[in-house]
Image (tube, rainbow, N blue to C red; front, top):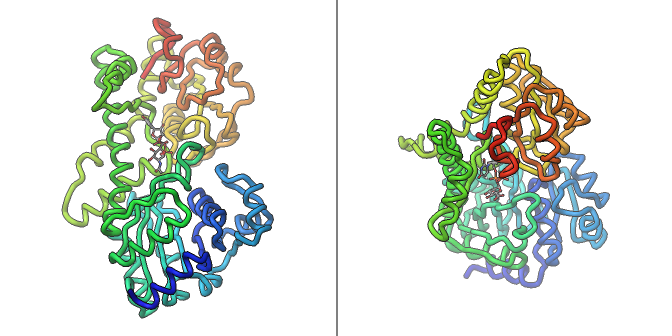
Length: 439
Ligand code: SAJ
């Protein structure tokens, strides 16, 4: 074992190793807090001065981490925050937790990983361990991050410094599986890289799952979320088929879900929202395209999921038509705008597409969401109506797009003239009720 690695391992076991987290968002802040709680001296680095100011004042902006915890860690001198990268010169351990969105073209946007890596490379020194956590296509850690770090610093991975990939598995709001107890897959650029990174992460995380390479770790994450996206696409297609067959897809799924093995329940919906599921699989299909392979399941599921908002609007149009009304000029209330229930996250929400399409067809659209007071998208802007039930009574049609738990569904059922329910929000209470049209 090299002297560099021996010294690093000693610093790790004695908690003398200093750690930085690049990107203090819904992944980076919880990770920083977990390691600070485990006794590490952690510096969060983020170019957003508001985040840094809040953290240094002991305030949290991430729901999963209470301000009281941030304040205590800052007071104890275990958690620091910096808007600049200079502190990296003193760091031994660096986790990169920056966004990996899609460009407008639908291609991966690696600009955040690139800029973080370029900044890091300026301060890279012997004995450092770097772990990339951002979800990305297989090969990113080796082809992009490693290449930059070695070419800019002249140092060698696996010898002078250690580089690995460990996919984030943060599900905001979840309390059963959190950063500290979520099994954490880790794969290195070299075996030594993987071993050192696993040793580091194992000092604070309950379950570390070493794999043989960074590519295995990158691909495992994409399998997890592609599995989800493709299965959601499957049940969305089942909804289209059941509608043509005159069969209740929700009842079909509940019946299939009674199978005690070999089946996993997914439910149809108005489309696929969030910053993971609709996006991560497209990183994989993009990479495979560069290798002259078409990831057909991903492309087909993405096509089906992307078309669901249009399908929902066609169902609204048909339902109004049944009542002798044109969509053009009808008042339509969209209930629920967040991409999934009980959160305030609008990213990629299908509600944005449903509202846009209804507007295109000249409906008079309003929306309600208790978590989201204001929505703007593609040149339009709306405020959440103050009284959802009153707006429902005045609307020609109500579309339930996000089934937040706290809605008063019996009152909505009573007040609305016509409901297109894309989430089976009313369940059995709407059975046989002619004014409820289910997906
Ligand atoms: N959706 C359906 N039908 C389903 C499940 C989801 O239409 O059966 C829709 C949701 O309405 C939403 C979108 O898909 O618009 C994504 O929903 P999600 O439940 O997958 O929630 P996310 O995007 O927060 O996914 C995260 C992911 N976590 C990580 O990437 C670490 C995902 O892997 C988790 O499985 C998921 O949370 C979870 O289980 O909550």
